[in-house]
Image 1: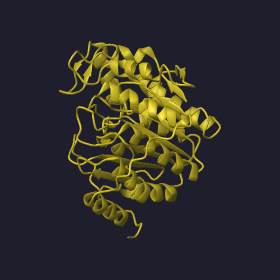
Image 2: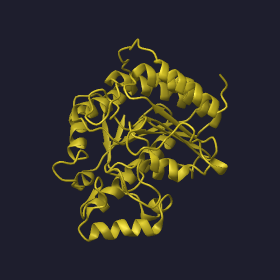
Image 3: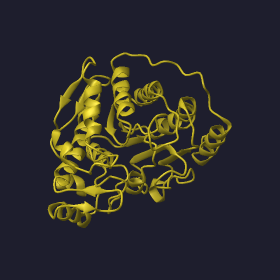
Image 4: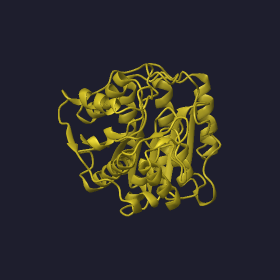
Length: 334
């Protein structure tokens, strides 16, 4: 597996008590040290025009000016320093590299994973929030649209990617699905939100109840995401890969295991293979350093031939009811 990485992303300093720290990337690299077949690539930073393809130009200029003046708290959660501007461009550029590498490569080989920061999926078209300034997955998807007609994004971060949804919810050429904890920050992503206008049906929000484990996640992927993505028929699948749904992550109540992330990877790879679409991974959240590094390493190991430990649990009644609701919203029948 090929990992997009740059030390530039370490220069985004959020302060000693902030959960989104440079140590996240250091932990990932430590966890990958003894793994076979790891290759690091330092992609180019995104151009301002690539950022403006999904963000309002006035907002982009505002971020640049904010950082140039020394930064500070954009909001109570979202912190910048002068170096954040370069880090944000680099993080978006690594995501763009992942999409371009996936499309240029032989399917199933040298699968790319961008491990940049700051993360991106909360970044709206005209505002920063939730630790995010530029929407890395959106930049990657928009760049990929130059090569393919349709792109699907699946976001398994424990938080709803409200920014990614907002950027694409009126478009028919980008499908966005989010598996997230119901009621958690930022409080968006209800099941009935399916897109608007030309984008109706191209947003799928799997708002899972707190405590959902591997079996519940896999059930929703098999029963909802597989058929809706098959119908959409993307030319590229981008995974917004946050690892904060892990059972030991400090800021969520979900129960996904490290092996569960492996099974999610397998399930989504099968969906991509069925669509004859390459797959690219873009790092989002994950705030327990050990669980984050183990999760990223598990994705790599799956592509290196490892089979995760099976989890015999199935969905609980709440998940089954959610899946039935989602299948109705998306015209999949009972």
